[in-house]
Amino acid sequence: MPDPNFQNVLGVIPARWASTRFPGKPLELIGGKPLVQHVWDQCARCRNLGKVVVATDDDRIFRAVQDFGGEASMTRDDHPSGTDRMAEVAEKFPDHDVLINIQGDEPLIDPELIDELAGKLLGDPDLPMITAANPMQPDDPAVQDENVVKVTIDRDGHALYFSRSPIPFPRNTAVDELTYYRHKGIYGFRRDFLLEFVSWAPSILEQTEGLEQLRAMENGARIRVILTGDDSTGIDTPEQAAILNEQFKGD
Image (tube, rainbow, N blue to C red):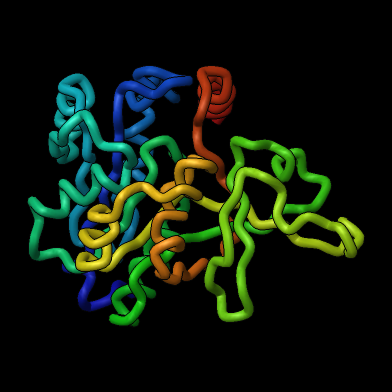
């Protein structure tokens, strides 16, 4: 059942053209549809999103979103992160108190996970920021992959640290006794905190790891981490897009 306050929730899908590893990624065809459309379709299945907007800095993406019946908002092209792009969109929609950043390259994101993050923020006005992670086995190659972000979590479900390195390091514990957590690139924010977040200068840890969420932690913010069984991954390379495209053809 949808939260009665769901109309206050804005889902934002950042989609930029100039990806270093995969230029034009949002318009890559997967199963005959642009990648960003698959993300939009997953958001359309959510119950706790009052509105969904694609945030882009490119006319080609803007027009493609309109063509499949979605809503897009043009943003500046100099934002250092998707969160900064999201904040510009938030300024255009002042009636939404909760904002969910849904990565534009995760075509299989679980709508129930999006709804859960939105519901947690709606139910706790003191919660500034929320994200998600799924458990991985210690022998999963993704643990050693620097393109896969890992997170450690305290007993209350808040993030201790995010890193591209395997964390924790198994110095005194057998590695097969550990559970690693893959950070999923979905974020939820309370509006006031989001606007405060983007007013801070990029932090040293953020710049070192290339992870914007560390800016929040270095400024003392706590980030709630929801554990999920959704282990779908984003599309980072043309090769990954080709594999998923073949899977859609098979279906």
